[in-house]
Each structure stands twice: as structure tokens, then as C-alpha cells.
Image 1 (spheres, rainbow, N blue to C red):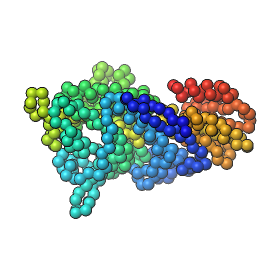
Image 2: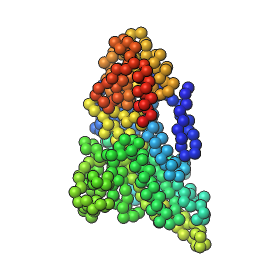
Image 3: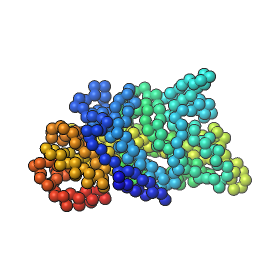
Image 4: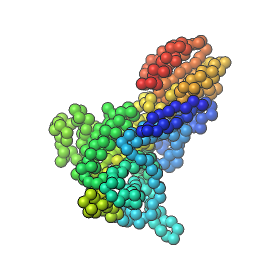
Length: 430
């Protein structure tokens, strides 16, 4: 099987190019809209066979769904590595004592609290400051050991009272959280700006950069401001933001009274819009290092507190947001960068001509091959619903030619074999 190489930092990471026959795919499309789902993202993802509902706010990811999620994760991972992040994996389960140390055991209102053996209290982590701070404390002693940047892509749990928005508000969800550790606030501020640049790259690669605003929000107990990444979603957005079209920044509704104009350019003509939060970043400063007495020896020999930053982005939430934004009456329209397969190949012939095409194409690209004994109409409808970015049709009517259609376009084109290969090569090089 052909292997594709992606360059990450100074490493080559190998990813096998997958191929799959739709007749063997775990997960089937369904016509009916799930009765207990209000959100468009959950309705379409369930109907198209990407996810399966377990209970409110909890879903199984089927093969198609996991491929999309992994594609999103990989984009995030590459950009985190590019700014010096080292990937780790912290546990889901944590003892209450860590949360009691920071004072959040009783104040964090969406904690799942469990009883373990010996009547000990535990929680399913909704965030990981309580885990990562004492971990890094074990390896940092001097200014020479700083800065440190670590991140993970890990499951989080929040006991949401209202989990009715599919992947947008889950009780169990996936989160990338990056934590940075610095000698002082100046170094924290510098890295904070680097993360902003990395986030813009991520959002651009996900094809939602032009729809996503760096949004000023309350910093809570940490600082005056934090920054949310809010993607405009007119029909389903749960948040309200006021956007500046000049700067691609916005102000969260909760701040608009004290910050009525653009924080960057002073523009007073802000536009009210509905949006979905896909990420946020905070300057934690010494909030958690103080709780864990995490200090380092400075150049002058004095003990000083470590400054921290936290930077989150939600892959599963992004997946739901993409469906809300990139869909039509027929189904999902995946951006090319996260599409579960490069090509959806439909065999509409009576003599199974598609098999040869499938074997040839899968040497260079990932292909989902609809080899099922279904009508042409059924295959076309399912292809629209699934939303793979490029569809290729083999049929008796076309003879030795092929029909190519991008999911986002209304029109298709007919090409011969040479033009087909040229088209595919150019399309996937972009």
C-alpha cells in the first residue's frame, strides 16, 4: 500500500493511504431525520453514518466520522508542533485532591464527581490545569528549564445541563489544550501572540478563517481579557458577538457595554452576529503555579513564580461547526482538508468497470468506492449526504469517460482518462 509522507517539524510521519468499499463500511445512511436531535450537525452526521448517538451529548464515532476527526486533529497537531509544542497525554480521571488544591472542586459547576475505592473522590477532567501544573513542576527547577510548551488532544467531560446541540455542546468531547510555562509575563505575552498566529493558520486550513473572529471576552479570574475564536453561524450560533469587518476581531456580548468599539482600530460600527465558539486562549499568569507552589530559580538566585498560558481548540466542536456551515438541502459539504476520503467513486455500470478504476486511483489517493448493488439514484443521494469533496462517476453511458463533480459546485464535467489524472493531480496539489 502506498505511503504518503507529511513533514512535521524535523520528522517524517507516515500515513497509510486508505481505501474502502462502501459495501463493507461500518455505518449506513438513513433517510429519516433523528427525532430526538434538534441540531443540524447531529441530524446530518447521524443520517450520513458518521456518528451514532449514545445519549444526550455523547456519541460514537463511526469510521467516516473518525477519519474527519483525525484529519482535523492532524491540522491542529502540525501547527502546535510548529510553535514548539510537545505532545503529551494526561489522564481522564483525577483525584479530588488536585482540584481541592486549586479551590475548584466546589466552584467548577459542571464537574462529574465519582466515588472510588475507599470512598475516595475523583472527577472526569473537564480541563487539565490541575494535572499539567504539578507534572511540569517535576521537570522545571531553573530559568534554564523554561519556557516549556506541552499540549494534548484528549477527551474532556462536562456535566452540561443542556446538551441539545449535537457536537457543539457535548458532555463528552475532544479538546486540544496547549499549556505554556514562562519565566515572566513578558515571555508569556510574546508566546500568546505566537499562538494567535498558529490559530489563524489552523482556521485557514479548515477553510473557516474568513468566518472566524478573534473575540475579546472576559478573562475571569485570570486577566482582563481572554480571546475566543468565534465562527459566524447565523442559524445555529449559541453566542452573540459584535464584529469589526476591518480587523477580523469581535467583542463578546458580555463585554459590549464596557467595550462598545473595536479594541484594535476603534471602529464603532460593529455588526451583531450569531456565532459558535471553536477555541479560546487565556493568560493564566500565576493562578495555578501559586496553588501548587510552582517556582523556579531565576538568574539572580531568587525563587520566582512560573507564569502560565492555556490555549484550547475543540476538534469535535469544529467538526460540528463545519457541518452547520458547509451543508445544503442534500447533505454535508466537507472542506477538502478534512474530507473523510479524497474521492468518492460511484460505479453505475452493469459490468463492474469501477473496480479497475478503484484499484488505480487508490494507489495515489484515498478512495471510498460505492460498489453496492443499489440504484443510481440511491448512490447519488448518499454521495451528496456524505459530502466527500470530490465525486467521480463511472457509468455505461459515459463509455471510457468519467464524470467529475466537486461537492461544493452545482455543475459537473466529463473528461477522458488523461484529463482525469491531470485534474486530480492539480486538485490535490492545491
